[in-house]
Image 1: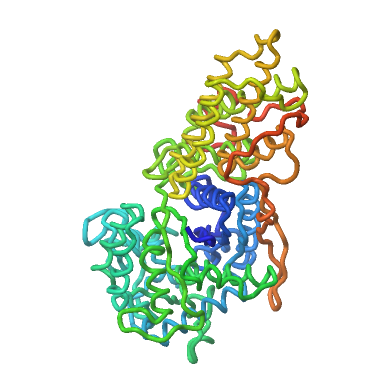
Image 2 (image 1 turned 120 degrees about the horizontal axis):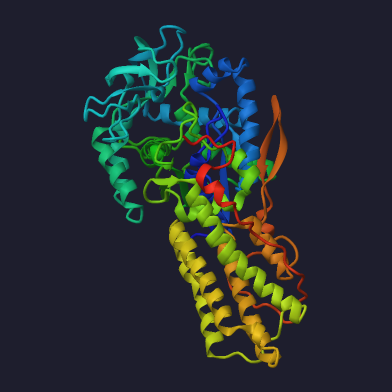
Length: 594
């Protein structure tokens, strides 16, 4: 595998705080993957930011009595704080309302336009009769004309997967206010996807290691591709960089077009902010570098078809060729890692219907690692998964508190009480060697699963080692070996070594508690580095908060490191508090599960 890995994480929309369903798709999986890759010695660049353009931002701003920029600033800050609290180790988490982003987006547009893959075209645009404002495709719903699904969106049908235009829908209505949109003729620029279809098909045919559902879905779209509008009649977005267009107050590049370019613009911004403006090319221009894209399943088409098509067109590698664009030849995705939906008590998360658990509320009451663990072991990796308080309490109490927390507490407590330090291992026997060998072998098994983004398999194997260690302690009964301290110490040394190994295996999932376990075992310094909120300046623009971190200083490495006998140990503090069983029935007071 390449030593350089780009982790491109879907951009959360900044029209409100994010809920746990959002971070189960884009947030936690990407961070678990990135932390493992860093621990394995890879040079990772993890980037994203808040997606801040489009009509929904303007609509929400009006509802809250502020300007669009004020609303974007407000929720950018909320989301940055939530993602930091969750421990998502971004090299840069930025935003789309930066001068840098505008510049990169306009360069991508220019490259596509010059190569003939962006063309002007007149279409019917959806407009709100009451406000005169353009309605975004995704905020129009109706019946699909192809399969009859009654909740199809104006950009695509989630049932049959076909690309749609709002005017195609039967009985279309606005999700914003329920009114029937008015359709008027307007001129826009379109991404000529049919002129990229053959090149996309050739490229997709070589993606043999992708998840089968993602690959099949993407390939099935190729025969139905149509030109797709990339501009809209609105005043909130990136200006169109062409004479006769750039100064039009109501013509802007559409939010979906500029958002996917954010992966590139964030990489460019990161390079500049870290003192080497050309450093981004190590991940984007080196053919040996790998790029993994993380998102929920509703965004597959943008990352497996549309964004690769944009990259091919800018590279001059579409069906009718062209010149390499202003950004140079850019790498296409190596893999698209899509999660399914996290539902809540059998229903989709819905802010408007009061069915929602916001990340900030969850972190305040339960901390980050319990949520990260639940998403890893019970989240929507391969199919829709349901969050219930009952299942969350059960997982937290039985697996984190009773299994992992209990193993840590009793093994370190006994070693501290009997020896005060990591005991010596002068009488190791077959059972000890057997457990140690099993623990060491888990690095290959768990690592292989994480490399393939199989988080349930990886976390289950790590927890299996924890269960084996608990069983070992119960069978060996070191508390009964007072008359044989050499053997007692050997048992405790074995248990502590497996605790150390298991802590490394669980670090990508539980980075906050992993730091505490590292310290409880007598370790010093940073074990699992955390992201920092930094306020940055932009010439010609306002200051804004970003997430960054010094992850190269992480001490954790993906290997079994022998514990040195004699290292002092302190009495451990409980790692995971058991949750009240009553929580399983009703949830916390602030929870709004119907």
